[in-house]
Length: 329
Length: 240
Image 1: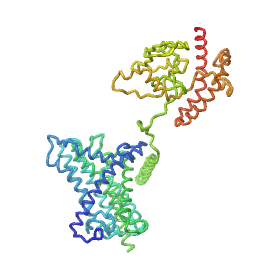
Image 2: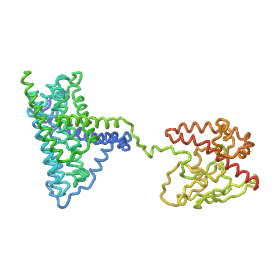
Image 3: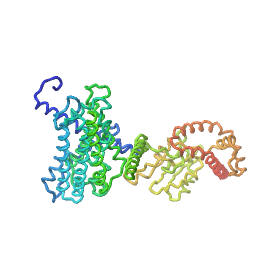
Image 4: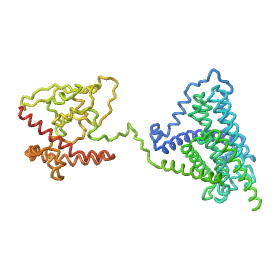
């Protein structure tokens, strides 16, 4: 069903894809602008103010148009194929996660019965593309950034997945819609039932999208810009957009898994998408807040934190959830 | 136990950090958006030199006495003058200030007895060619049109200040006071007109603490001006 008309699945999918692509790109532009605003106001500045008259709202649009016109510079010693495909894969993988994002009770591209597992699998593509970008650029900074990124994401993937397992255990399903539907009352939201799980997820997700305090892969002071040093023009824009879209994806998953998804305070399902977007934006804001508050971790601290703290905590959460679930049942 | 304690104190500290940045997020930015907004410069700041004119008649206050030209240490001021055959008064025919060599020392302003030349808070000079920095009389007069200043030529202002407040620590000799006292009656109305207007303007400007300083400084400045003025006027009269 789309606007009351019965359409074949393939057409619906195409519509959904086009809508998602448009919305996501616009959202990425908005997020970049928003991040600049948040960072500026935390530092008691204004941020962009000129472009488009009203608080520089079209600044990122102008930036994107500029990047489109830029010459695409490829280093002579780069591994051309790897270099070319890295941004494509990172952007593609990011877009693919939108398949199972439950915007509202009905608006979901495909309610896969392995939904959350699918997301975990797809986001792993990001590591590959970052490694590809680092390796293909044939630049020491890029390579170091890529290696760091891979090490970090592989490490944080483990507590992230384990923190999600608690939610899956409660909902008895991997499907995103089932997980959201399970949180039908405020006190059934998983942030209430799984506070520790939410904390672990938030921290691991921050690391997953390479944001401060876990932004070692693109530590400016050490690596210039990390894995995307050698990228310019639209390829750079792809990385940049993917980074911000990834941030939204992570926030959207947090919303779906822990914050009640499209359930609003009044139980009105027709406004589900609005609640979903609002909650996701709230999580995005928290991620931005983190970024402009905390200093970067050291590499060994980063690993120590993942393996010595987050992993045991995630296990503890899983164990407690399992025990209580069985006792209550 | 130590580890657990560390864990919770660590989380506490992280939350404190978030609150600190959150507090700043709520504050209004302190940025001044330059081309749209500008600082209100203090009245006595030393920027572009302008020629002041009478706000009513629009004529320059300058009497072409050449004192500023003589006072200028860099020779940035060039004045040509002529005498009006009817009134027997000098007036400038050419008044040029070369801002490329001006040192903004303010000696021209100090030497002037007629509130004719003043350093202002204007500071935007940039031009594409150095020759544009040489300001002629029209330009200087135009720049001086909207300049607010405390007239120094009003002995009445001094008298009014004295009546309100006790004289400040006997900085001026008494004889001078008596000299000025003779001239008071004529110029008193003038003073009453100008002063309230100035105060209003200052209130509008008072976005900055600096204006307060300025206000407190003003009476003294006026007095000093009066002193200088009296001397010079005496000289001039005797000279003529």
